[in-house]
Image (cartoon, rainbow, N blue to C red; front, side, top):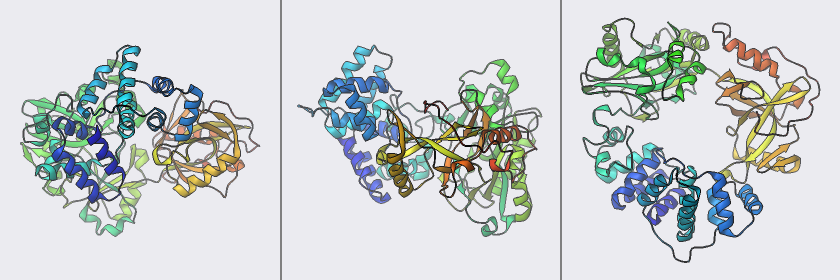
Length: 561
């Protein structure tokens, strides 16, 4: 753990990409092989399941530190990070040990599901033998909150430098649903390892289009297609292997059994990139329909009939076993359309429709995206290869402007990590007659300067405390942006937003000017009925407004939104 802690500190001590790459490269050359595998797994999002919950950790740590639980909780509220709180409060180890990262993570995996006394004995014994830095990392692994501030691309670059393997090749070898507990370092870094025939390719990603589209040059140089609101995925149809992978590298073949007939019809050696959507016969259904299936490992027949899946193909990455990613998009697209046109009718697979015209025509087409259950348009240079990851210049996502709503802050909670001393996590409300109704939470979109100013304000305007949560005077108004809205019986407001974030702190507005729950409900009705929402109706304030009377008392539960 000391070697891993040294790597973590080296990453945390610099913002320079070159220095981070050098530290990772050195680690991958010198660390024990099993530790290298676990480090790759952690940096690519493969974390072991939590064997201990936060309540148990707080109780055990308070007793091990010899402090009452209330004092531990107050310390936690100030620190804002459970792993850091435990690392600071526990007494220093009399005799430090240095278990390997491999041994530590295997022990945590074996601990899952064991009796409370056994889990407690192991955790406290490890605490007693680790130094402060190693103890902090051990706690992060325990809580499932491990982050190192290293992108997957940077990690891949360092691994390529450490092994002498080309970066793009290394990125491909790391793909798939491999298990770090059963995978050797050579399985990941040498040809023929990992998932073999079922292994997907690294996904090409797009950057947000921030300039006018005509700044990209002639529209004829670009392919425009809908940016669908579904699950990005790849279909692998190679000899002896049929698999469906999500962009998050989850193997989801069994979750979409309606795609099984494709293995009998796709030519061997085919890899398709596209979007999995819920299908309404000839067009996608709202994302809320697909959500009913996402969390299920098995799909009941009734749900399978109500929400069938469909694969809208964007790209052909492999044809006849030949990697086409270096070929221009124009060639890949032509081959894709020819392949799909030769398939029997009725399969849950079709090419994603292309949008045609000059920039003015494409701008008008983009305005119809919500009617098509899309988020906007994708713009892809016809001469571009299929990149690994995100490379600016060739692929752009030209999304619609978000929906917006003006809301008042009701509750504030401190952030984590470097923002542990700032209030950054807020609960917002809209008006419902004389009342304020909480309807969403958001924690991103503002600058550190703004968060610092809000933190000072919260300190002076707190009405009640609920552990780390502060109920405040309902005065600060914010413009909240979001990508979608759906009905939700789990929330007091009856609605749920997709990807809410703070767009602006509206210091020019008072609480009497915020939007209403009736306005959100009207937006929900329009979004639920394709074809009734115009592209310019993206502000709930433009929809039917409710009462503008003075707001009343607030509910005491900040979590009940």
